[in-house]
Image (tube, rainbow, N blue to C red; front, side):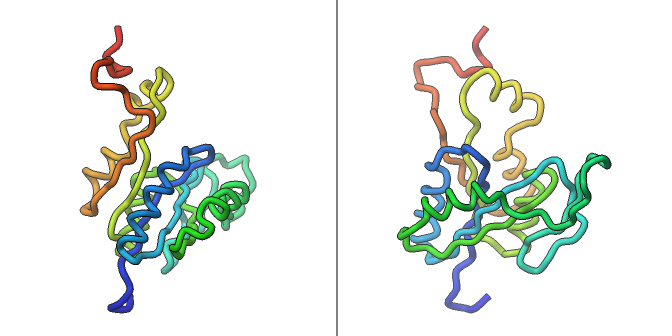
Length: 169
């Protein structure tokens, strides 16, 4: 990395994610003069090769699926990001990753020597609460498994005077 170049800001992106997550990451990247790296993780695949730029070759976990080693970043998501990031004043790129999201994002951050990882919270509600109870929070996994700052963008926060979804009886 050039001495004048700042460490990149990584943002975890998924289909139908509220734009607030990416737009918040844009603000950090702009303030730091850094590139924004938009990373999506396919849980149904595993990494077989990791390249210098942090991108990966992967294979499906299900042996009955085609074994295309190179998985492209989802076109629809990339088009949405291109529209969203147009004229925002930051350089940006995408990376398609595979496996456990916390592990994959942490490995990418290591590979790129990222300044931070930005993720969003899950949507409030019973489904999101059950999924988080079973698999744990991506932000919590990241915060405990690597040394970079993890910035969590709240999506639909619960007002202070209301019970959290998992507290409701």
